[in-house]
Amino acid sequence: MITIMRKVSTFNPERKIINEAAKIITSGGLVAFPTETVYGLGADALNPDAVRKIYAAKGRPSDNPLILHVHSPEHAAQLVHMNAQAERLAKIFWPAPLTLVLPAKPHIPLITRGGLDTAAVRMPDNPTALALIEASHTPIAAPSANISGRPSPTDAQSVFADMDGRIDFILDGGSVDIGIESTVIDLTNHEKPLMLRPGGMSREIIENELGLTLSVPGTDSAKRSPGTRYRHYAPSIPVRIWHEESDIDTHTAGYMGVHDTHKNFGDVVLFDDFANYARGLFAGFRKFEREGVSCIFVEWPESNSGICEGLRDRIKRAAGCYV
Ligand code: TXA
Ligand code: MG
Image 1: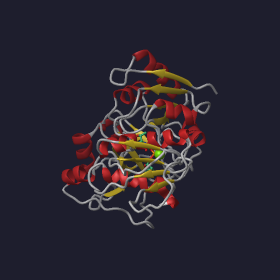
Image 2: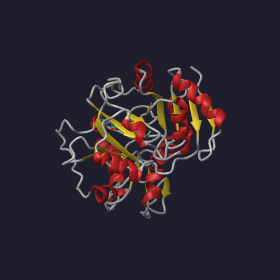
Image 3: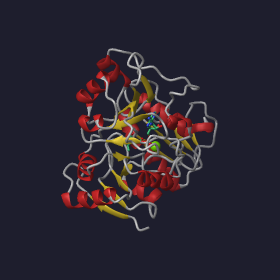
Image 4: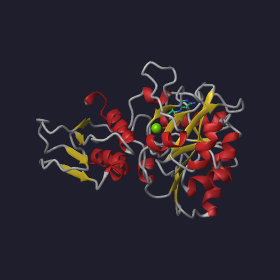
């Protein structure tokens, strides 16, 4: 398969290019597109054959359900049973890096929702993504556009590196804004909303709006987001959390963080603040991988608030057994 890549102006996408991409979606093909969080790998969410191609292209286990991307809260209400909390969050925040898990309506194919009786919906805050969903006249199922387990792509080149020859089309809308995936909230029990995955929208802002604390499902809970069971977001070289006392040879290793360690690393990527760190984390992994460093050391964010809860989660998963 030949993968076509086309540049679009993210904030004012060219109609002709959007229509070309939408035609591929409606005919059952795969299109990668920018969102505000990471690039998505999209297919018609209501076409089981098209959705099956997503799992094949990513090498993703098919019990890991996909997010249905919609262009409005009304569009979401066609797919899931919205409750008062969902309507409120959608009205106040969408478009946003906020995904809502709710009871699915029966016409969503089982393959799209990983066999569950719930489905995840999100309205992304990116004009190119929204134009594509509208022009396709269907919800777009889209996981992050990386090979399963690898760092999520935050620019079109990273999508191309993983997906060349596996998908039909890439909309190149430049680098994303947030850099880690959306926050996933399960609202099926209105007395006990769950945060299944921390991400681009902070816990504080959601809890404030709901007037409730978001619980975290236990590790053995069936409610746990299926995707969080797998090792994730990892480049092919070890990622390790930097400790001041780390007694290792640093000069072949890379370091990424907000604070300088003043050690003699082979390469160092420093960010102005933690929002920029989140934005550059996955691209940093991929850059170090291309450079062939022996190990990637990453700063552990001291705080767990704002973007740092999601950032900590991605760092922990990428470091996996190497912590
Ligand atoms: O920012 C994002 O969310 C990006 C962009 C492309 O929108 N998408 C993304 O998709 O990160 P993915 O497939 O990599 O992650 C979706 C997460 C997984 O952890 C999955 O298990 C969870 O959402 N999820 C989807 N449907 C669910 C459901 N019905 N119940 C529980 N978790 C669900
Ligand atoms: Mg992913």
